[in-house]
Image 1: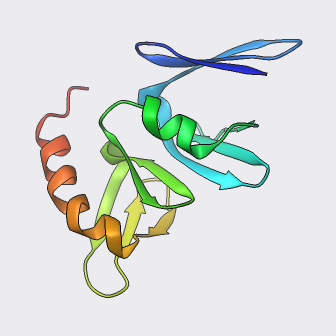
Image 2: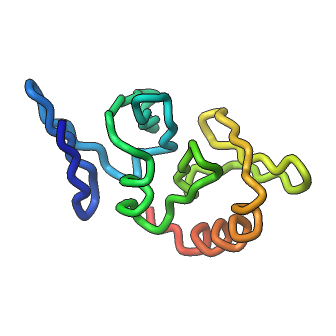
Length: 119
């Protein structure tokens, strides 16, 4: 399996098929060893054998890590609970714990990204 990060989508080439997933359709990306699970806005999941770090460095700016095992699309955030147990809620009902390290930059990045929403 090969994965290519194109300008507006991810291209996944397998033995029997080629799949394209637009970045704006991705709600979150989670680890589920040994796979990465891409959650789409159409309640679809795609499983890929790749590291989360590979995704982190190649995704557009509106994606951000919540913790070591989850990356979210900031456009799909519906609620952010501050405090000791900071939690991010997405429009599909998923909720993710925000690590201490990420809390400091999450709020500012979320506000900035939401201001410049282009779709």
